[in-house]
Structure formats: structure tokens, C-alpha cells
Image 1: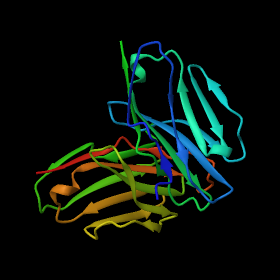
Image 2 (image 1 turned 180 degrees about the vertical axis):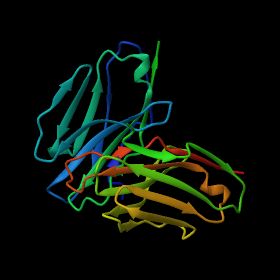
Image 3 (image 1 turned 60 degrees about the vertical axis):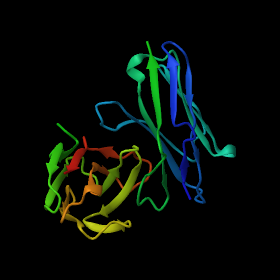
Image 4 (image 1 turned 135 degrees about the horizontal axis):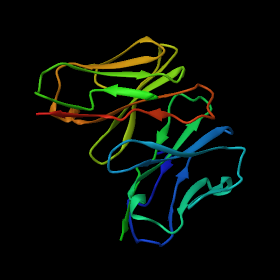
Length: 114
Length: 113
């Protein structure tokens, strides 16, 4: 079973629109960690944010914000006033308490149209 | 200073050859990983090492053999390369304390012709 599901395969928005990327996870651990990574066209994987299962406080960092809801097992990511440079593939990831690996979703490809 | 570096960045080789990808991290992390990213961008764990010990070995053909000479290095050797091995291979490292992210290398794009 897929532990991390990103139902949106591809999203296109016009520059300056807001966009939310969805992530749903599955785990039986009570302690776990969630992450978002960005993979721009250049190919590297860039870490954006992490959250542990005990910290449901949502966060805003510049144009980025994250919404962590344990009740729905979701960890969504919003970009406000999108820019062309935001065009990338975004991955949600989960690490469980056993901590032997990071489980990645299938990624959401975001295209911001100028 | 590069945190996780892997070489080479590009590797083009013929079927049947043997090749190696090297990975080094200077972050003092105790856990290192190899991930494979296929053409659909799916990232799949191949191997995970903690303090030089193999802790995850997913269903990977035994043509793939990781080697960790010390905690800072995790190399990947591939024998008898096949067309289906073409992918981007990422090395990563982290600290075993789970509340840390994984740091990734730049990736190695392997093309088997």
C-alpha cells in the first residue's frame, strides 16, 4: 500500500494565483515525520519543510504555508501568489519511528504560466 | 562545501558493462541511502545503511551492490547493466533521530544504451 499519496499528478496555474498541493499519508506509528521537497527542472531535490506528528501548528514562511491535519492524515502545501520559478515537481514524504527510510509520494508537477 | 556529493553526474554506458557511482557526505550523518527515480519521477528506496551496516535492501537485483567503507561514504556498484537500469540515482543522508530531513546529492543520470 502506498504510504504517501499525492492525488494531483499535474497542476497548471497562471502566475500570481494561489495553489495548494495535497498530500495524504498512512502510518500506524504515533510518532512520525512529514516533509515536503521541491525538484526543479535542474533535477536536485530541495528540502522545504518538516513536521513531526506532535506539532500540528501550521506554518507560514513567505509565500509558502503548510496545513497539517492529523485527523485527516493530510499535510498540504500552499503557494501564495505563484511565480514562474515555482514550477517544479513537489514531493511529500513520510518517515516513521523505525526510521529506516523516507517514503515519497509520486509527486505533483506544478507549472506556473506567465 | 557540498553536503552530499555524488559522482558522476551523468553516466552513459553500454549494456553489459559494470559501473560505479560514488557518494560522500560531510554532514556527520550516520545513515545513508540510495534512491532510484524512474522516468515517471517516482522515488524508490534501494538501500539504507546505518553506521556502515545495511538496514534496508529492497527488492533490487543482486547486480546492484552497495558498499559503505565508512559512515561518510556509500558507493553503488552495478554489474551487467541493462536498459531498464536507466534512471536517476540519488544518494542521501540523514541522522537516525527521525526529526531531521534527508539531504540529497545532485543525482546521477544513468543511461544504458
